[in-house]
Length: 468
Image (cartoon, rainbow, N blue to C red; front, side, top):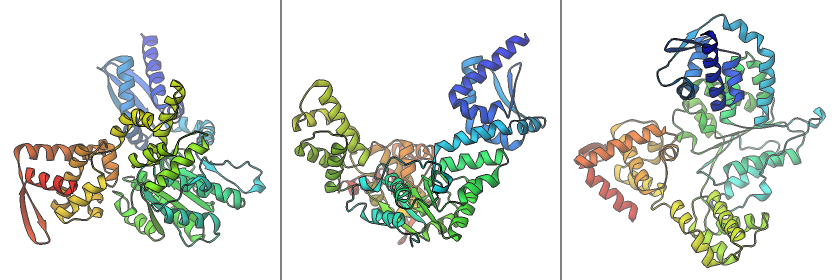
């Protein structure tokens, strides 16, 4: 019987490790928990309440899936604080140190040449960045940060939609600094890596080492800073890190999908720090810029693409750089596999489905503009966490119309609307859908006073405004 229980525990552990990755399993489960099976209950012993909350918040779905796969749907999960595990956790510090060293490979960290450590270059550079009207200001700001020792743009906060070149600019800054100013210590990582490293430092009681590693840098570059939304403890830690670097006269560069004021549940202190520097938006590329991007991508990969095909792709794919490059790769792949020469007629045939899938009926920016005009709200209001009747109603209609008239998924709509959770989008769409079915009356406050309209009338007017 004992061997059967042990076999079940081992099977569950193996299944969980496969789902979350062996490295995460070793950090959060192998050396820190005690798993036991008692009847219908599967108990996970943890050294403290913090560990219990963290594991439950981040791994509960994986745990339940692994449990169903190995032991069936009838078992139930419980967490138990076992103080005896604290000493076990201390004994595993040495192995955790090695795990942390391996984790450091997830991001690039440069040191001065005197350390004789080879610097790791990143993939993208400013030399390969295609400059146009939509990104010229951001590019010039990036060049200033890369070239000037005491740049006035601190922090440099770059924001914009997906695939418009934000990460390209950030990596370009780091590579340029590494090449032209090798004495500069720079650190490039994502906000998710920052959060994970912070939690790991807390868990292993190495917070001082974590802080020293980040705060000694001359240039700190953080990608996807909006990831810190709704993480107050991590935001507080980043604020202290930011202040330390800034007070030392060093540079911070940040990238986000949204303007600082549009990131939901971001602390006021961080917002104030972010907007105190240079906040610049990168828009979707215009036609001429898209042409340049296509030409450069084809040249860099030694693709032979006729000019009329490049013009066709640039004219019909307007969303972002990734869509442009994806269309060219698809066209070249088909040409190579079928041994057909790339022509305009072939491009129209091969990319027809691609264009239907990528080109929305309307653009999300058009939806926001129409909704804001109708409800007399601002785009900042829509992206904020405000919950008054007017803003909430405008936000709900924006989300509903975006799901109805674009190819954006619920998570994509949520991120576009200031980092909202996809569940928020689903709930908003459900409310508006039910209101339209019953033609519910809505009332809200406008600058002219109270307004009341039926749901179908509101939707019809909004769709008319968007079409115009």
